[in-house]
Length: 272
Image: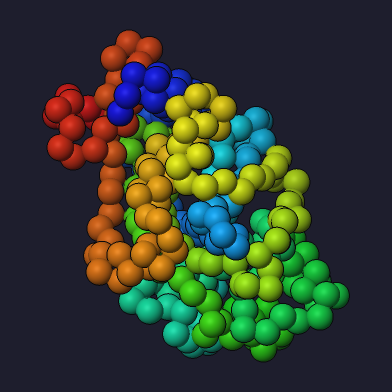
């Protein structure tokens, strides 16, 4: 991590720690199971881009940061009927986590990754019911007879919030691709989001380093990993060979400096 990137990272993580942390002697909270989805598209003749959503500056978690669509895994996301409807999309991943990722993408952006699209009114009604807590994804899939065999997904990573934060998540990261007929898709955002951008992963990382694109450590690290691939085909090939293991960073806290560190970092033993 270069000096410029280190400074930006420290500022963001310090702000996040200020919003919620436990004392040095307190027992860490149990991470909440969660899921997120990296929505990618490959414009004709260009490198692939990913969708980033901006959280409001007043949000309790990741305020003002750019994030991938995602949220908590609901109990209904593990329903056997819903898992069956996922079909080949699951591959070797966790079906409830994938269902949650697809649901959160639909809730937050209006894009439903399904084999066939319901009519516009049915789609809008289902999304409104989910957002209002009047329905769950199992019921929506059943009522609209949805299937997800054609969804091209890959399980890419799993990040657990450091123990010092009071709000902790155990988040599964999936990669998926915008359907060819929706490559120009623009999200219809809820009030819980403040904006969006499509960026190549390498461009997003550079904007982060310049302080123009605030992101939490797992998001920025994921983008750095994605930037190593020249195409989505190469990325998917790598995912098929890669076994996902959970990663829990530690926090190196020195005065006003707060920096996440990973196993192998020289400061790992000093971090908490």
